Image: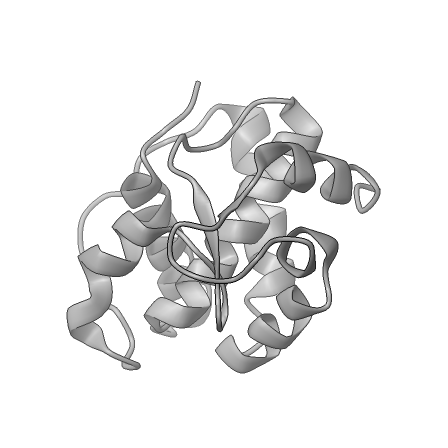
Length: 144
């Protein structure tokens, strides 16, 4: 079952805040969405969320989520509601991806995505979609 990208973004914000007490920026949130979507596609063969990820200058972006949180600029985004629940298997993967990638700064994640095939092989700019096929193929090689 695919969820909304906003629901997944809120789940990331909640997870990071409860694990480390940190608030993350919109830029970091965008990269975390990219990694969540990529690993979900590779592991479950279905998207975590239906919205497309685009290749923008500073890395992968889900435009609807970017717009939703752009008022925060480069500041941390607060999330206060109860996040959605995923299936047990999805929760396990989600938590692992959050744990691994939250260690990196927004800039660190941007630099990582700029070295990865899905972003590198997609023209950059608004409307330039990173295909789910590219994400699936790339992240299948990264599953352990």
